[in-house]
Image (cartoon, rainbow, N blue to C red; front, top):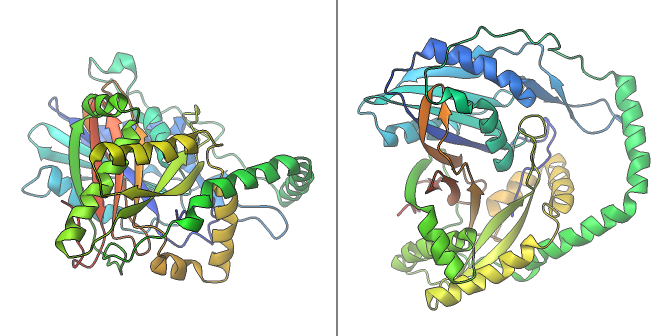
Length: 423
């Protein structure tokens, strides 16, 4: 239930990155220089990818997004041949290294790496974003702006030289404009006070489980190291849907039940007996905007998932609270957590909080991706693997993405080695 939502540039010191690995069928060949130019052309359709989040003068409101006049595609997109022996495991190793690096704060907060020759006729594109630029739903919106159009998927793409964006870079707002907007915003906030109070009430209700939920002490919460690994588990999404539907549950409910079971087994082998696993579950607000309106629009709640009893009873115990959570305004908890985390950062207590918390055991996020197979750079996308990393003292976390009938579960292990839980 910890989040880095809506943070200014001087406050988001945590390297909280998300991303994805796109596995490509490059059977017809993929020329890196050509791919580089095509990506440079397409990102013009996603304005946020050429913007920086900058702080405003005192009294002029919160940080704002402005066009980066020094933007260069070469600062964000790189290519490299896949090291031997190649294959998915090597690509995931590269992704683990990339997602652990700090993104420079003086430029837009994203990076892409095209890995060529991962196997004969195959390649991969690794995308990484800072959470302040786009949450998981916003990340899918970015992908929607980069993939090929329907008419481009059946034939090679003819590269069209990039047409200059005559409006870029647009000048940022002046200090006077910021001050006026900030003052106007304060006046409007007074008018919205009843709705804001209602939202805070919804947030309190959303976070109410935190008051009575406590994560039992286990080896899942301990000091983490700089190393991380990714493991992918795949299954048929239609099969999971049938199992869930037959029991009045959702795919997300089945995933959460499975995650708790997967963590309980190694704990049991270590002699750590627990009755429930507490999972922080995000609930994101759906957005239709494919480009500009990204950001973080998510709320979180902690769910205590039982690990004892028969599977059907445990699934029912999960489906009931998640169904209740969906009936509440999405992202309500952000109204409480974001100001609290900003305050803790200012007084230097945020890092201590997340490295010593005992509220949750892990994170688990489930997203619905494209149901029809997509293509990128003229290459069919054979797989979409979501990426996220644990924060604080969370040693293992899960992120799940459905794509073209397949459910890919990425298990991120981030610890010293003594608590590795990936199987």
